[in-house]
Image (cartoon, rainbow, N blue to C red; front, side):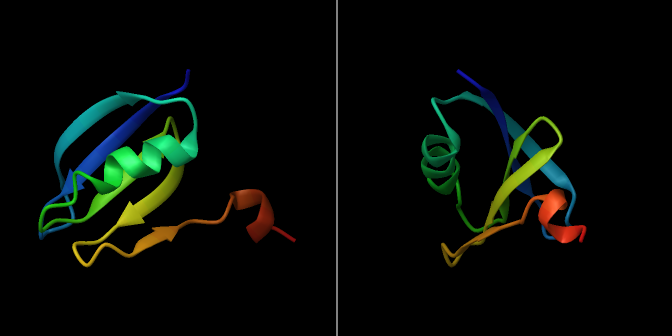
Length: 71
């Protein structure tokens, strides 16, 4: 099972807290991270790979893989 990091960001964009999560896959990790949104932006990472960003209005935004950006 992969390990994930869930970061809560402050209004200044700096990390306020980090939660370590062991999940079966990215989708399970996204569901877990989304539950932690409480008035602050939450980012979901697996090592150096940013998976998603959740905003207080509960709209996740995913970052495309770097490989798809380089053409």
